[in-house]
Length: 80
Image (cartoon, rainbow, N blue to C red; front, top):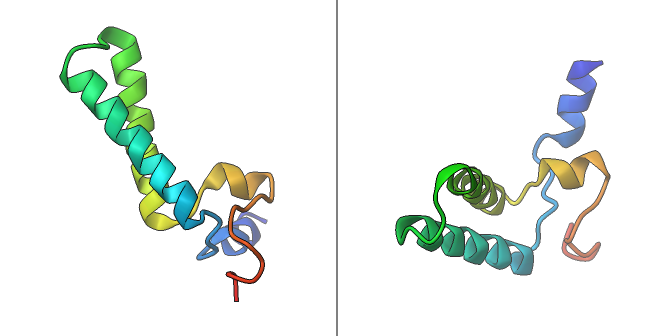
């Protein structure tokens, strides 16, 4: 059953280019806030982790949360 779930999600893109740009911009903003000490402590750690996740999902064009809910920001005509 676990192998079926892996194969269902493997290689499927569900993040379009606009979504990617938004994710990268948010990651940059979070990084700037952290490195300029505007945000510190636990919130800085959370935003840092979130920034890394946003960057990874944008570069991979795949969001596991979208996949869990069978969502996609890619138009059907772009999926071909």
